[in-house]
Length: 382
Image 1 (cartoon, rainbow, N blue to C red):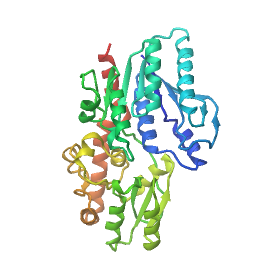
Image 2 (image 1 turned 90 degrees about the vertical axis):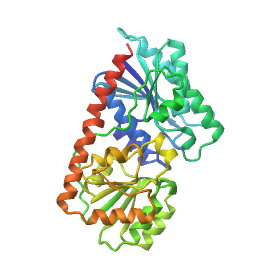
Image 3 (image 1 turned 30 degrees about the vertical axis):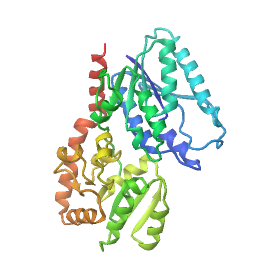
Image 4 (image 1 turned 135 degrees about the horizontal axis):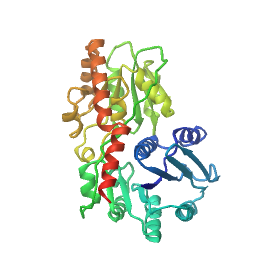
């Protein structure tokens, strides 16, 4: 089966190159998830990824030309970007439709399944136009509730949810997302997360805790810093991520053990994760948020080869009760208690926890395992 995957993710090296010179860097969370999911689909199928590159600001650069790259079973087509307001979206939809027309005219091409990152409004419009024009079936990937995104406009988010309900098949991350976007109970397959085996090693020469993610206060970075600053351990807290960094930079000046690394490439993130004493997800417990989403770094931390600390989560805590250092609801005091608990463990106990976590998660959520799950789902649609 041939799959056309509408996305704004890229090959990892291309994403890093795009971000290198950007004034405002693109959010890597979406990139990482969809890049891995594309590779999982490609285990059993040819994937044509049609990507519009995630430029965060208009005008800089003003234009990116079309480009394509092929790697194993995946062909990436990067649409040309006319990076001007009111023009960018229309041209992406027009150029994307023309590209699909050329793809479908190729010899021996059978009707592909059209897959779309349904959280992206431009890609939703492109998918609907292509599906209607060429009579293709659509599979919507849904990774979050639009109403819960940072800075969400309620009317626009509610409109987006209604728009998402018009696809043929669904790939939501949680059961609650399926209920939200799939009220007609169309065929669906829940994919809670995806991770990958990797071999990276950190050369950082001091023991450290590691956090990587969004720097918005609502995701717990402030609480983590406050918890760490009440300890006197001779270790460092390394922070990498994107978003508002004023508080992080301020605390970095107050406590020399805190180091802000900025936004790193995925390869560098893997290195720091592998060498950490422990990787930390401090996102405060929020029942409404948790039923719709899984912390984006959780499974990546679990397969890093280092232990994981996380705030509690309805889906994750029962499943991995003994494989994670749990930090309650994520208050500064609970994060400190969890850190003290971890630091009291022997090196052997830490290693056992990390090894078992990696084996367990890769068996269920590794790219190969997810690839098999996706293939079974696709075969059931025939």
